[in-house]
Image (cartoon, rainbow, N blue to C red):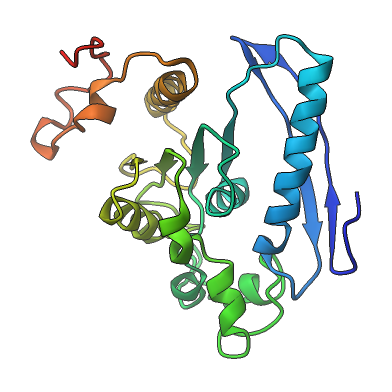
Length: 247
């Protein structure tokens, strides 16, 4: 669908059902100069109308919605929750959260400067940090962290060669400083995605527990309620569920 001269919004909505859940997928494209955040507010409107259409078409469509994405999709989710309360919970994996600090970084695996991808390719800001300062700030979820009201789970690993994991740290500590419900998982030695089977399984379990808690009122697991202290790392996973009275 087209919603203006600057940005084009395409919506792909295909509902798939499993475990009382439906999947709604979006694709979007923007022109140079608009930046990533340009489509978020219109996309929110698109999402609401698509979900309403789905609810009318499928009686089994769940009433609680969650947003989920990784890398580029993780950025979209992280930015979207600064602008909308559409989701009951969200998961944003390995996203850029602060384009001003990311702009001055490098890709750890290649040593390549990251500036090009913000100016002209992936982020399409359309200028340097000094030429388009306001656009870099506007498109950075970090600077709108105080607007986030959606519980958010994030994964960012310390060997990520694509998006430096300090991007995950920046938004996580901001959200904790603001006393927002936020969790950050780091799988030591893993990169932009998970390669080890044990870590993939662990991540799947924790995502399931996170969404089950916020979407279906399932008991909260220990790792969400209390965390796992560094001294207990490797000795306990904290995935056991607490009873409703917190025991």
